[in-house]
Amino acid sequence: MVQIPKRGKDPFLKAHHVENDDLVVVTAPAYVQEGDFGERTVVDVTVKRTGEAYRWSLNGTTNDRCLEAWSSDGDLWENKVLKIQKAKQIIRGEEKSVLYGVPYKEPALV
Image 1: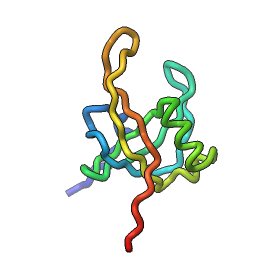
Image 2: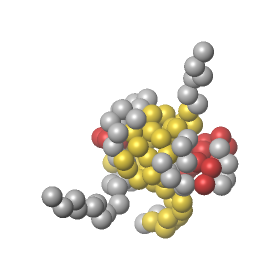
Image 3: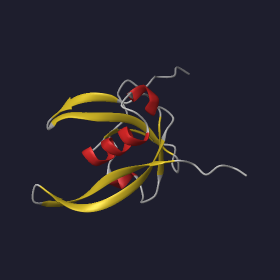
C-alpha cells in the first residue's frame, strides 16, 4: 500500500474544536502572518484531550499573555502549554465564541 502524505496545513483552531479548560501544547515556534485584519501571531498546537493538531491565530490578549510569560522570541514558545478559556463576545454585530489562552505550568510531580 502506498502512503499518501498530507499536503495542506492543519486547520485553524475554532471554538467548536475545544472545551473550556482544555490544554493545548505549542508544537513549533510561533510566527507572524499577515491576515485580513493585519499581522497576527500564529502557533501550531495540539489539543491534549483529543490529540488533534491545529494552527491558532492568537488574539491580542493571548499574544500579550504569552509574551509576558515566555518571551518575545517565538522560538522559545515551542513545547509551552496554554489553557483554553472560551468567552461569548459581540464581534462585528454577531455573538461569537472567542478563544483565549492562558499560559499554563503543569503541576510538579511530588
